[in-house]
Amino acid sequence: MIKKAKFLAKEAKLRIKYMTNTDCLFCKIIQGEIKSDFVKETDKVVVFADINPINEVHLLIVPKRHIDSVLTISGNDSGDLIAMYNVARELILERKLDAFRLGFNGGKLQHVPHLHMHLLAGKKLI
Image (cartoon, rainbow, N blue to C red; front, side):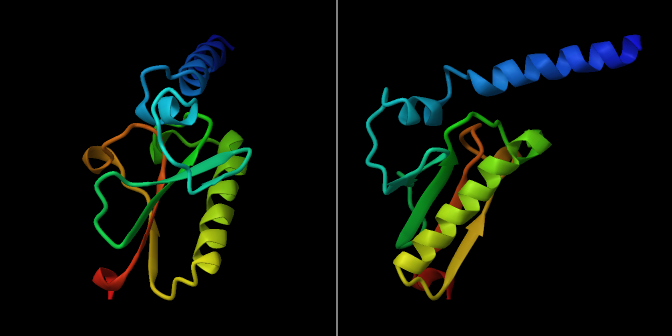
């Protein structure tokens, strides 16, 4: 019982950090503290262009709730992940992208510690 209580306390601490990361660059963009033009916005997700694009289309699909990375995703995050996928699908169809890549970076490849999906499209992919 004590082990379970310690686990739940640790998980609660992670949840609090997870929902209120005031130092996060993407959280500041989402809250309007840093200017960015949103390509699309829903109740759960925002989309904006990568400031260092590696292709003709390089969009970041970002959940509004702070989730550190793919390694911290829990069952409670399924709605955010589904929303990210649905927005990606809408953008692909709206822009008639016939060659595209969706993906997450992690570890040393993830430069901003806020979960985000990259949508890449363009001639460099082919």
